[in-house]
Image (tube, rainbow, N blue to C red; front, side):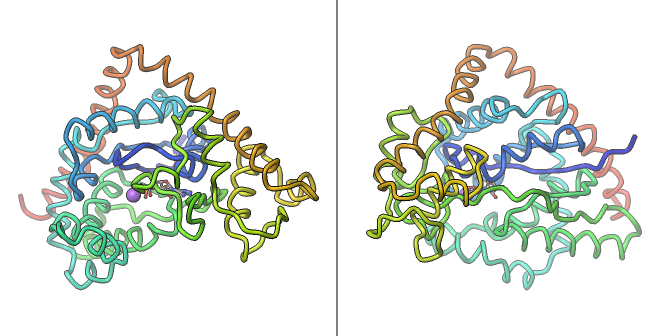
Length: 327
Ligand code: ADP
Ligand code: NA
């Protein structure tokens, strides 16, 4: 039977947050039985921003362990490091020659990142979307689960694929966005108008997947709210709305159910319930991480196996592309 292929990846650029888990990883585990999935640790993307080598290596390893701990099964999916499959970089070079400066200039993420890292606006940061196009197109991917912030990158991927196909004949599958159950969008605890991000330097904004229960309780207790003392989901109440979203994502309850549950209750009691719901969700995952970390050989084997399986698929596409361009 032909199953549709899904590609997704995450940068090992920090500690995985509750946002990454509820917004992405949790959904990935729901896709693995129905789709043919590749879940990549995109370490090549991570170096568009300066990284400490030892830290990057550790974060990549931690990301792998956390993929596994949340239930992404290495038998059902291909889990691998981008840097272990050289075809990503090779295809990216070729695709660079089929991408226009003007297209890249329009990428809003580049503008944001260039503003944030003004001392290091490197060419890799600029051509990041081309490497991402290579990631996706190498595997003849059907579907890409994308958040709002990645939509523009999927669009340029499609444009590059269509352009290449029209010059050389059918070579790449033109991928589409996976429109599934939308994962929760989790906001920063101290500034609930921006998203919780693993690259945030203020760690009080984020709950890391591996934060200890006491740390989680404390961060939730200190989350920014408002002064009306009403647990209600409302645009004008971003802090409380975010905590309600977290609570519901962790408990499976609806917003209406949660609002009813906390009707007439103060923020202190509400925050305790939110913190406990998060802890209850993360504790089993943290235990799994600790168990996996004891098994170095098993992790090494997964890394090796993933690179081999991804590499075989990638090579098919790369060979075809190289022939087409005249190598
Ligand atoms: P980060 O900003 O934490 O570094 P990335 O931009 O690397 O995250 O995104 C990795 C994945 O996690 C993407 O699928 C993205 O949509 C998802 N994601 C990141 N932050 C959040 C969030 N705050 N809420 C929900 N999903 C998120
Ligand atoms: Na990021």
